[in-house]
Image: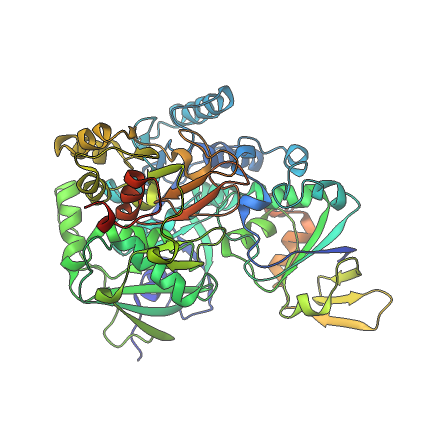
Length: 163
Length: 416
């Protein structure tokens, strides 16, 4: 399972209030949430993500609240994967449960630049920057996580088990 | 054999095997909960799973706190939707508008030492004040707990913190939480459970423990647990009228590291926006002009917070806007009986109860553009309390109250 796209790079501690402000939490519709993703940081983010992007971030991506809309909004906006130095525990679980690949990649911010085109192999957890001879190994995802991601989320995964 | 930490002891009980750090285990959950704003999402997920089965209705606790009383039609609609779920399933532990904040209701009525508590809200960590293993999770995870009674966790690495001595006047649990954030920053404890040992139980009451445990999620700790002691037993006895037993770590338990906080050395502190770990002494930032002061939330809306605010504001008038929100109806009633509410209202504060209010920028005093907020709540992220250009400074109740009186970021000594 591979995902790819142009990189948008963000810094440390991208918190859930930045990813999706509380005023949008009265709804769960992915398309509605996608329009407002990362709005306080960059009101144009949603448009930029629409082509399908890979987010690269620093420490503690998703720190803050338990709002699952943060993961839903990123995925619906076109974020194919988040590669970060570290994640907050709750966001990490929410992302996997919603089929958004999240990889812990120590040192990624030093290797990848804004605008690079990267291919992420989720099985091998390898990141390749296209057009450059650069590849990087991230922390491997457990099998169960790969199965959940490949089904598109936890609910979808549980449905495949029922069949 | 090496002894077990409190975290390991609890997770061994609920997983049915002896766990060690980094194990991924399936566990049974003692208490599960949600509020209005995450609750409708949990129920939507349950519907999508295809069946509203509730594993154990008695272990489910619901409280409306985020958008209460509803400030708009959609919030009212959300609450109506959750109320219908409550009726359909005859949920007993349901706390409607006007009861209080979920985390405070859990402390007052439900949580016991050694339990596992999972709720759809990050500040579920608060329940660690009574020695529970408490984690916030998202709607999907919580829906799974409601349906199956189970979840999975990674057993966190244990870290020991000792609280030694006693605090200076006006310094409270909030300053201790901020001191830890100042020392360790917000990423150090990611993947760890932090177990607090209080050397002199009476020196650090449950109200303060609740503030520290609440801020545990701001340390990004997997869990924060106060080792149950006589103060814990006394709190449960006073709130609920019965004795609880202490669940304790083994004396020879091993921790990855430990840290001692000399309580007497902790100063009045402030977290400067936009990060919770950007901590400074109040004296370094004093004099800043203040538009709004908020005293309340699941972090600092308890009786001791209101007592401190009332002592500082007694006989004075506020120069900034001031909103006070006791965390529960129980706290509100006690504060009424003790005269704190009268004092705060006389000083010019707006007082209500049982809502998160402006903490999440929901309502009841959200911040306008460029406004400066001095708040006893837990997050100072960009736009957290309203406009993205507003700025939130996090403090304890004494600094909040003093700042309301002077209209500038102040210490109690400036007004007394």
